Image (tube, rainbow, N blue to C red; front, side, top):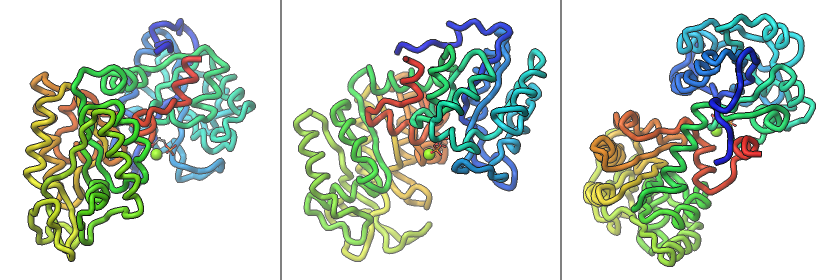
Length: 396
Ligand code: 3PG
Ligand code: MG
């Protein structure tokens, strides 16, 4: 890791263009989950303490190069002020007059938030002129948006080539956690990969079987692997056309010495709904009119034993249909076990990616993991072994 951090930069009196990811969920004009906002606070505070002037750049939603009032970042200002405890001035355009005026009027201790960078086509196009217009506002670039680092956009990539650049505290923490979990982990390493489809996680599975000692496969994608072994999975969600691919993954795992753990027992139901009547059966005994909605208790015990024997856990995706009780049972039990081992100092546990955080929080286990990433797509791409443009640009 060859990028600079805030410690390496002279920020005194300088305008620090800081890319953050405050793409937070909102309902009726209110932020419903402030995690991403809370996690940028250390960076903004550090910049202020070092005498710098933080000017925050961010995207919100996917306005596709147009001004979409519902995607204005102005809505996020109250939540941002509450988290930071300092006044935040909003600039109605992220480049040009409004941005320049807001920046020029900054007093020490103040923070400026620029309007949604994606209101300009040049953002997603990583246009040189647009990146230059952003860069013209400041003297130092700080990227604290790990969760947007898989996008090669002007505010995440182009600008890093124009200004002295560094990683913010959250970016640092995310990269360090991933490095601990997968780059240079303490062994044995176990990965849990769940979720609906094999097809969306192919590259992830291929990369993980080269790196981890045990791969626990759960959720709908486990059904695809069971079906590929010739097991009748009834009406379960499964990608039967992926059977060859699933078998190839298993073969590759055999040759790399990675053990794949599939459910040995499953919870089946006739309807996909909360509280549906259900039964637990061996994984090869799903009735033809039923569907698998969760891993069974024997599988949970096996997973717990693997966790107990491992030193590092990396987790992406739920083990069952965790949104509808009681089919959240395996996910909740396994997450609790991981949390317990982590708290006992026996396991380093890192989780991330879309549904995963919601699933762990649902289990009440999120706070007890070693690290929970704020990233969805970026976490997955990093786990796939891909270079993230936003990170690479900091190294350049
Ligand atoms: C996210 O919410 O995952 C990040 O902010 C990236 O957003 P995007 O998928 O619209 O690029
Ligand atoms: Mg996304």
